[in-house]
View 1 (tube, rainbow, N blue to C red):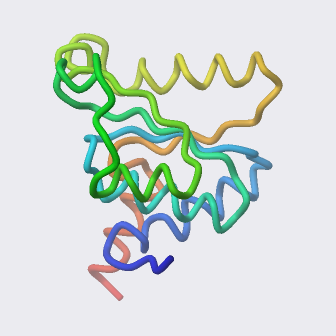
View 2 (cartoon, rainbow, N blue to C red):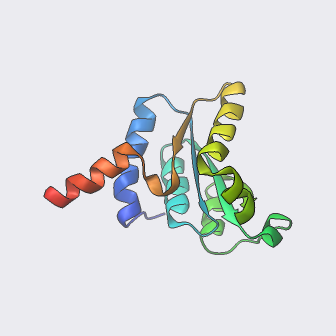
Length: 135
């Protein structure tokens, strides 16, 4: 499966950092049709890392199976573990708390998770964006 676009440029370095830190799985979060989440799931599969996605969607879709369409289809095809949260729950709890909760759960199971925030926007991802402006 081909990876392309601006999301992949960040992921190249974020995934290298995950591997360098000895991670055995990746956690990220975004909307149900997030290109970032799809690219992360595919990149994780290339590196033989499990991928855990927390996907924000409507309350109706949280309570039922949203089906296999768009990016969600790709994420499931590459074996990503998908947790759905409602937009309301996401707004109340926040992305950091949601990913930290999953990280703690995986740590307690003996896993070594690496968390990538929404859109890959952490200090490493931001540095790469800034660096591209001047190179």
